[in-house]
Length: 217
Image (cartoon, rainbow, N blue to C red; front, side):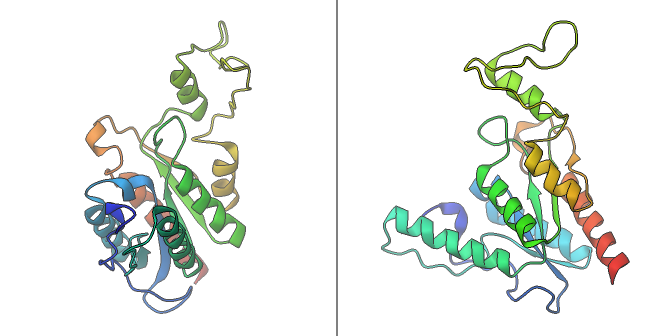
């Protein structure tokens, strides 16, 4: 049994190892594209972008993980442990922060971004929308900006404060990237079919990381 079709347990998309080993800085490629039917093809494209910039991309499907006969919950825990070990073996993360199943980024990707921040390793992110987080929350609830100032209302329909710091997503996520010395790369991608497949923002992050690496070598 497989937990998700997108994890491709029979496929290894990148070499394994530990941070700092030969083959270039190892970069964990986090994002909700792992749920797409063409996940493997997107992973290959991302790894190729990294290679062109002298980096080694590590996609979450990079494992020969056998989930045969496991109950769904056990399989999920096995995937978690595998991805955790992949993260430990990487030097940095580039996260796809494009909103997923709501106004915010994929929650699993947010965890992975925070994991690298806690390790003190470089964290970078991109989003294929230019609308700030507060505006997306407003749209999610069908609310208009507060009259007169163009800003968001103080509360959502459940009485909870709406975070409005002119950031791409929750302040803890943007804050981790800013603290690492980078900016969240935002681009407007209007084609829904390309929302998680357009890699221009990813390439910009890859270039920024490669440039940082060159300066510090």
